[in-house]
Amino acid sequence: MAVKLTVNKDLCVGCGLCVGSYSDVFTFDADNKAEVIAECDDSVAEEAVASCPAGAISK
Image (cartoon, rainbow, N blue to C red; front, side):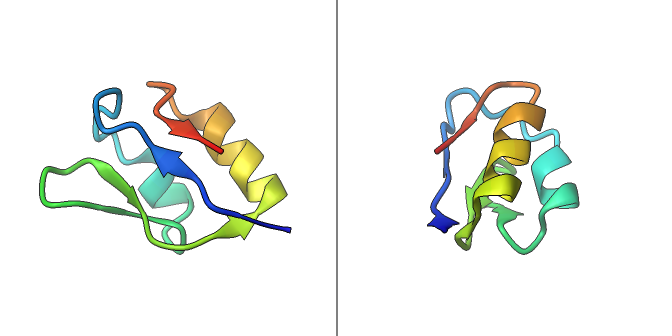
């Protein structure tokens, strides 16, 4: 099942973990904050949410 994640820009610290790990799902915006560019499967979504050190990614 495809999941569309969201990034809370107020919480994102721009560390790049999500972009580096899931470059097909995330990129950086003009402010160097993570931005969702594609849907992903549920297992990737769970991993991305759990790995964000700032807790900025959610389903």
